[in-house]
Amino acid sequence: MNVADLLSQAREKGLRIATAESCTGGMVAARLTDIAGSSDVFDRGFVTYSNAAKQDMLGVAMTTLDAHGAVSEQVAAEMAAGALRHSAADIAVSITGIAGPGGSGHKPEGRVCFGLARRGADMQVETIDFGALGRDGVRQASTAHALDLLAKAVNRNRA
Image (cartoon, rainbow, N blue to C red; front, top):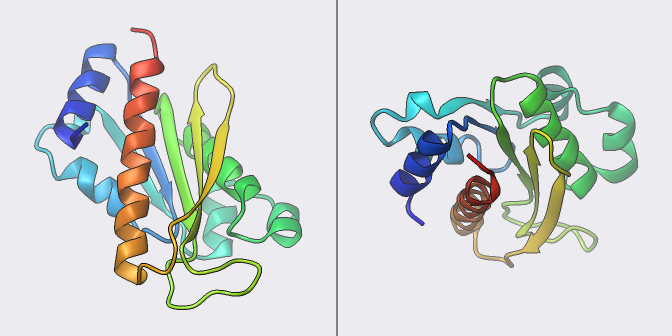
């Protein structure tokens, strides 16, 4: 689904969207706002690149960051939940990952965790290992995947 269709379907269902981004640095928000008139669907985006920003802007717990690291499904879940809590959105997607270059044996380049929060629904989280696509490749793949998650969430939501 293209972004214009995603926005159109969300508009038809009266749904608003928020984003919480780390490794993509606002790329999902930028793609959504590339479409004229998106302001009636896109509420806001949080770019929380540092751990301090994740805590301050989204309410991610330091204990979660300490226990699991910023690139984890637990942090992705708290980011998405925080984006819903601090916005007027009905659906929020979060992204936290290692765009590269490099990574570690435990968390390689290309590992990205996603969270999807919907008002009145269970949190969804997933991790995708995109591989060493290079920094831009990982960021582009992550952005595309987040937009796909939003499209699926909009289609699941009842009008």
